[in-house]
Length: 297
Image: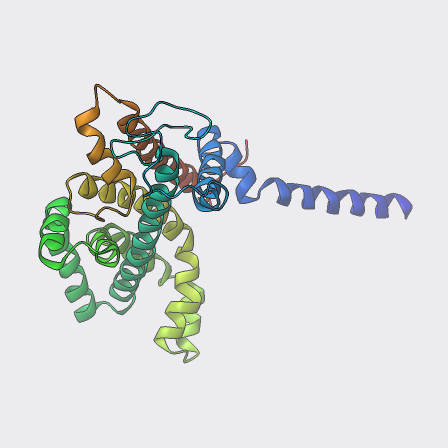
């Protein structure tokens, strides 16, 4: 009897240990690059969003040391061509760039999930209309669409977010559409339908929760694309305008000093590149970690 009890306890402990080892974070840890990218992005966001409260230098204030000053304790990254603290501008600019990327990603997810889920679930006329709109939008070069829209509608931060989102929801819609078609054929969905549950309840309670892993992966890849797009349009002068700093317009302002003060271009350029790569690596890792066929090695 005691041996049987001990066996049951040991078995329960083993099952709990196996569940702990099979958590998302532990599965993600097996992909070293994705796991490192996750922690790097956490640190980056903490530094960018909390840093300005600690380093309180005004990013628009002209410093006494003058323009293009070298690195010092008072100005760790020196000053730019107008004599403004580069470190403060990197922190404030990173906050704006990452917020634009995050907001554009959330807006894209809302549009893409709504279009893809409705098209896949309701089918027929809804599917034809929504998916033809999606295909038409995909036929337009994204960057060209963004440039034209911002030229016509203006370059306020809200407009930049909206335009970037409107240019990047189509891939999300296609992913959600395919997943919805797959899940709506499952027995638990048919049972809910047979029991008289309303269509929107079935869609929001039984189908969309199954698609969340795919939505999360799409979100990480979309925010990387949004950051890159915002930086590109700001570099071209059509994004968020000075004096509000972003990594993109900092890169634009530094191009004429690339030989005399290369750090002005290297810092924002490196920040954009590393942030985008980290989000892409994290997205690839999450795709594997959230796969239900994932098997712990």
